[in-house]
Amino acid sequence: MTAPVHRPREGTPDTQHGMRRRNLSRVLHAVAAEGPLSRAAVAQHIGLTRAAVSTLVDELIRAGLLEELGPQRPGGVGRPGSALAVSGRGPAGLGAEVGVDHLAVCAVDLSGTVRARAERRVSNRGRAPGPVLRELAALVRDVSTRAEAEGLRPAGLAVAVPGLVARDTHTVVRAPNLDWHDTDVAALLPVDMPLTVDNEANFGALAELWLAAEAPADFLHVSAEIGIGAALVVDGQLLRGTRGFAGELGHVPVRPEGPACPCGGRGCLEQYAGEEAVLRAAGVEPGPDRVSLLAERAAAGDAATRRALRGAGAALGIALTGAVNLLDPRAVVLGGALARLAPWLLPALERELTRRTATPADGVVVSGLASHGPLLGAAHSVVRGVLDDPLGAV
Image (cartoon, rainbow, N blue to C red; front, side, top):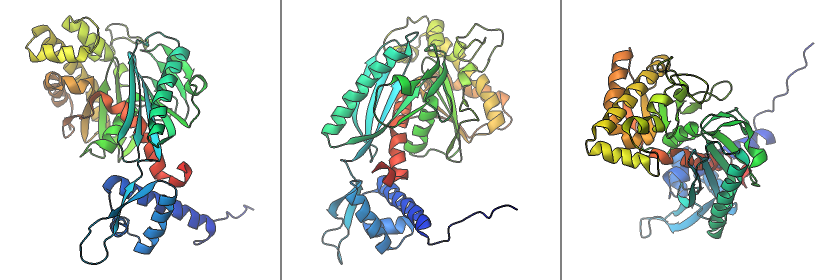
């Protein structure tokens, strides 16, 4: 005989505790997104009584997550409400990015404001993970120190990497452009705080979802630096795949018998539309700020550069055809270096999509975050964790 399953009755302490945690989160999310707000305005936003919201607000103020700014409408009819805002001296999210040619770290407060940032231009291709992650840790300590000087305390660190990260782990299974394999970032990164590691394209897509003014709930986000990555957002949620490897657009074959790729395949999209491939085709030597140089040459009418960008756009369109036909996203969003080069990439890209897709997406949108998306997405993922579970952050 099967034993009966115990379910707590409505109103038991467990249920009340869970409801309280959810309502604290709802209040904090409302003020973070719409603030400054009065208690009455918060109650209207989330559908709770004024008395219930006041109790929740008082708890969040004691925890240092909300602060009162004073009367919202001094001199108005009746008693003015006190305006509430998320605290500028509380938990902060740290985001970090390991790029092929740079390291970066930033601190974001609960309002989404970047309060400290550090970056170092350094070639990481072929370097052992240990030294790279020790340098990253030094930047993390620098940004943490500056954030703490402003009364912030890091609630966690999220690291964006250009490679496959096993789902719910800290392990970079493969990062072809870094030549990293089965790298446990947590074991090599000397930091003492909660840690998350994810693919840079995933964080770029989340940044677009959370920070873009009118981001759709369903879109395919494509970004490029040295490599090309993609991430799919469905109904406001990131689609990760069974192992966490969804979105490897850069290693979709465009021409199966094409040039060899560091991933072990041939004719991958990165060999035609990756940054280094475009530089080669344009006759531009690799160097600092090369994307700006490509944009300048294209704007000046340089024939070789424009031809290279047309070729890259066509290759992107071919690779995206399968994804659009299979997944039916509402929009395709271009981020990273692609955003800077969009004026010269888009005509060929859209032409291929139109030719090859039965039901094309509503449009190709250029991200306003450009190359900052992965770093901001990483930092904001920590902030979202605080907003989702204020008690856990405290």
